[in-house]
Length: 475
Ligand code: GBH
Image 1: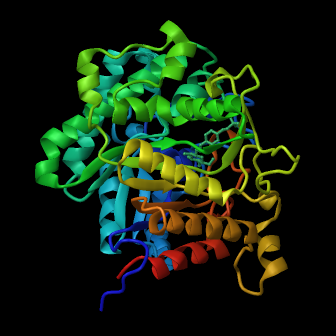
Image 2: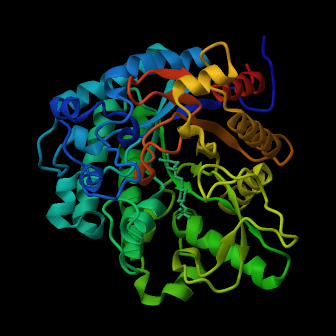
């Protein structure tokens, strides 16, 4: 019997991770695995870069526990799993002429097979921030267009060759904004550069690397392997502080600097005018060849989003926000949503619905929601036992705030599809993992991870989230 509900039958839902955030089980097992260092290994080795001193080499031990993880996701009801391949695990030194790590190839082969055996569609990110360290030393990594595009394209090709018989959903990059701005502008992320010129060069080179790998796939692999490829961008809804023309314009400008930077060139063929005006010749120009390469280089719009900001035109010194002032405050002094563990994150489901509509109308592509999630204030201060015993007789950490967040965001998604006609085809939530510069402090997951024992315990939100999709995806 066919049951038709809001979301299409082939809608993908489950959990999202990234290699550097979950694979490591400790320095020794990482060494044994043959993985080369990434820029995050070096970053974590430096004092004071990671808030709690934790290290990318010891995170969730997924490398050893992937079978359990796949089984758990399946038992929770997921039908897909989004993960990333670690470039330095496949090619430890990273370059096109460098040797391949067979143990790395075996790991991803096994992981993909395990997903398929359990009915999970593998949704694979090629680059989620762990650049092979050697490439950064050799030629400055993302700063050298010619060399990095060649090495990245070679790495991507290797992945299509090795895994493309089974992987049908590819993402070239996760959130290029973060690599450009957090990695090369403010220095909060690896490689830790502080600059007001590098981010625009890096962003440009990421776009060309994306297009070059995606076009390779579309032209040489798609017809035989039958998959699809795209990029995933971070971007939160920007709500004008009030209806003054300056604030409305500022909200658009902030949007341009966050997602238009990457989405406009890919889907519309040019950088946003507001960026050209502000950045002048610091923003590289596309050659004709590059523009042709970018055109139709993403078959869908991959969206990571977490929150909504109110935006004022009032000049700030934040060039990366287009000199707008970001906040959460409304003119009456109230906040647009409740706070989380992190200063940048508040729960604003209606903003999510507006964002989906904006992307749909501006870029006219199917949308794959590749990340969304919530970090509860103080959650990391509770020991597992406390979190569990205090609220439940059974071993389930209570995460009411996250349940509420996911209820709001999934309802907003449903409304966007059902009432607004937006074409959304996937949704991925999170597991607890290594949160980059914030270390293991924020817990984003709907699955609790004990970082001493690596034990996993699904929280209430994992079940709520999967039940929503079970009820709302057509069968
Ligand atoms: C995601 O990025 C990452 O893709 C994912 O790996 C990670 O686990 C997840 O975040 C949760 O941390 O501090 O004011 O400069 C989310 C996009 C963009 C959100 C940068 C936070 C920083 C705002 N992020 N933003 S600020």
